[in-house]
Length: 222
Image (cartoon, rainbow, N blue to C red; front, side):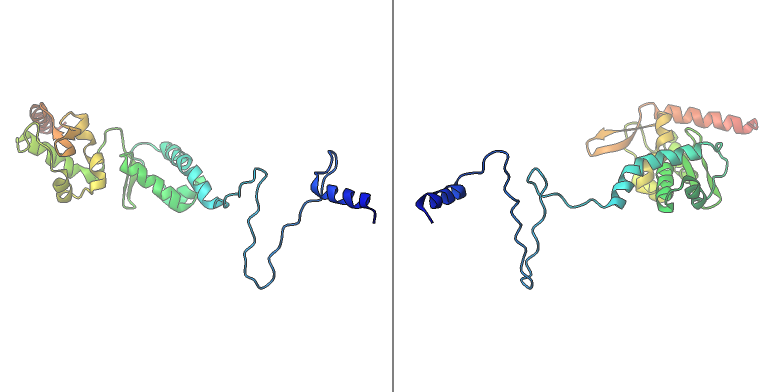
């Protein structure tokens, strides 16, 4: 072979090919059988390794969680206040949604004071401001204690103790105090020991007036 031919071969190896010509793609080395080396992950066009695939079930559940809550609320809103609601499984069939998801949506609405799911018999919508059946004793006891000045204005209510005494769990104290707050007997605010429920300055007079009004209505058969 001539020296001229050898020089062309060497330059062809060192210099990049001219434009319009493409070298064949380099084959990725495959691991030898029996070595146990895992294959290298494929890379996208940007040169970054693609992320692991997302579980489709978890993704759909996360996206539909808020939507399902709205759908359950809309389905329940067609029933009048106090009218018995269908069973959870029947409601899930109507919505075409999993039973467990519909059950959790109903429980969230009950915790917010929208529904009463007291066993299988008492399943109905609550009117705005209406107490949950499980909160009635708690509300009555607090009103009576405020009217008798057992808890004077400015006092922090021992809601934990009151809840245990009247069957209200700590997670449902906010629901049980809704009507007390609406009647301006109790206010939820920050205090020296952190957020708490405090008796308002005008709570004693208000509680006494409400008690007298109810007592008069009872005497007149109202």
